[in-house]
Image 1 (cartoon, rainbow, N blue to C red):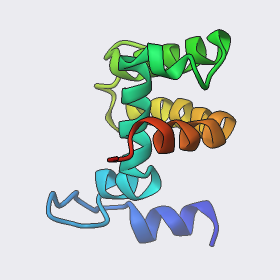
Image 2: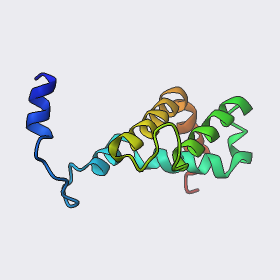
Image 3: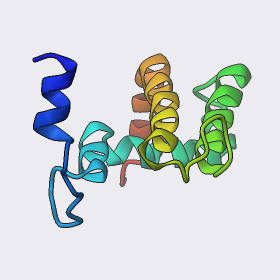
Image 4: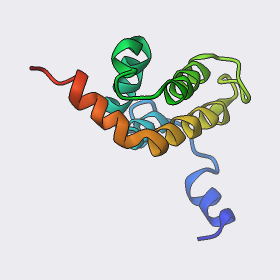
Length: 114
């Protein structure tokens, strides 16, 4: 399927249904495990724990990425339809790719009910 076929099949004349399970946010939540997102937030809000697993540079990169996503005005402002969220998702994907093993270790160490 080429680009034009994809637009005709999935985009042209389509409207977003908020109850549609295949909506943008539904796909986003399936793409990013909600526990990974929660773990990133926990890392940022509990840096004393995170410093036991991440070195200071890595922790700084994670904090900067989360701050970037939270800020409404960034490289592509969030109010610009899907493009505004796309750059945020790229940043989070990079963080999960680069630090996935350490994020999982953090979750198992500090976020499991004991």
